Amino acid sequence: MTANVDTASGHVDDADDPVGATTSEQALPRTPALDEDNPFETMMEQFMAAADMTGLSVEEFRILSKSDREIAVSVPVRMDDGRLEVFDGYRIQHNAGLGPFVGPLRMGADLKVDELRALAAWMTWKCAVLNIPFGGACGGLRIDPEAISSRELERVVRRYTASLLGDIGPERDVLTPDVYADERVMAWVLDTISFHERATANSAVTGKPLEMAGSIGSRDAVAQGLRIILRLAAAHYGLGSSDLAINIQGVGTVGGNLARLMFDDGHRITGLADVSGGLYDVQGLDVPSVLAWREQNGTLEGYNGRGERVEGREFIKLKCDVFVPCAAANAVHSGNAVELDTKLVIEGAHGPVSPRADRILEQRKIPLVPDILANGGAAVLAYFEWVQNRTGLAWIDQVVSGRLSRMMREAWDASVEVQGEFNCTMRRAAHILAVRRIAEADQVRGIYA
Figure 1: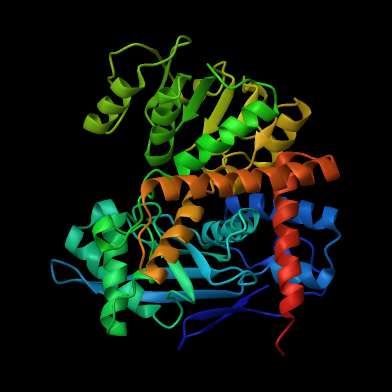
Figure 2: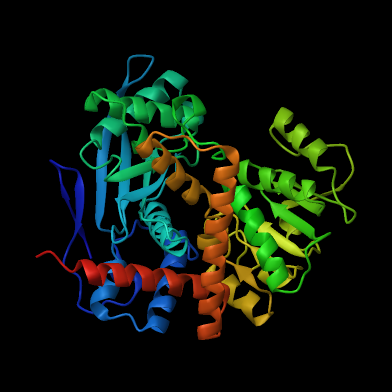
């Protein structure tokens, strides 16, 4: 299947697709030469399994298996040395059945459109599971932010934003932070939109600095949500509520904050790992010391405090009660899933467990809480920030944390109910819940034609 690009608008329209298409090959055109276990294949396999179990109609399957819109833009920018560079920019808007689009902006030199498609779909499922009135989207810039100056990056971000003005905004598509797109980048996006709107468009962007109408709780939202789900899952699967041994893969904004929160709750963080390798201590690491070292040095390498140094590929074999992958997609795959020594897996990243690894864990009777439920804290906080900006009323910390806790618990309870109904894994249950809610919304909306 091919795609036609409208050069005037930058919109990508899929060519005709066979009726009743039921494979990921038919669902979307793909960028070539992707790994076997790539995020798009992972997302589609999860979706198709849920669609099959819910008895989704062929018509509804065709709607949900495609993005509503795929936008490609060229981003010409004058560099500091006077050269003109042209970068590739994208915005994938997956499904608007539940409301306006919302989703991250990410940047990377090896950015693949399939990644964006997967992330946009995951945002759709996540919003549905958490009962947030948004559809999923994801944008990207194919650029290495570390290879250019801050001034050049700002020009790229602003030109990219300006190219999408007709497709983004508070009631169309709300941008959220992600890889390399921090508060500073979100501020540039907001300022660009506001300049062209001739009005401050606070609710067009979330993850903004507090000084620019950002929300309390945004910086550690994913970790706070994971903390809530981890507690609920540990109780549900009979692990108890105290002195859990937890290994966390990834020590960035998500993994590092989760380690701090769980350490403060009295649990043992027995393992922490980043790209340089890992640290392990069955008695529990000195988390404040480890995080302080990494903050100062940018890596765990060279840390000389308590804990045994382990190679990255060996980290997954270390014994724990709960394993939380907060790093890359497909970190747990068919080659290492059999070596995982844990009683429970909580997905902190997007798609950190491949479909093949998923089946291995199921055979080994190791329960898993999927990303679309577990790491939904950022989506909830994006919704909260959007609401606060729309009403012009900032919430205090207790209101934010209380409402986050309520929404995460309600999503957990709804997923557990579906799990009991279908006698399936928690991943399957969460996807069934999401597909049901979106399909019902699409049916009520009908087709405009």
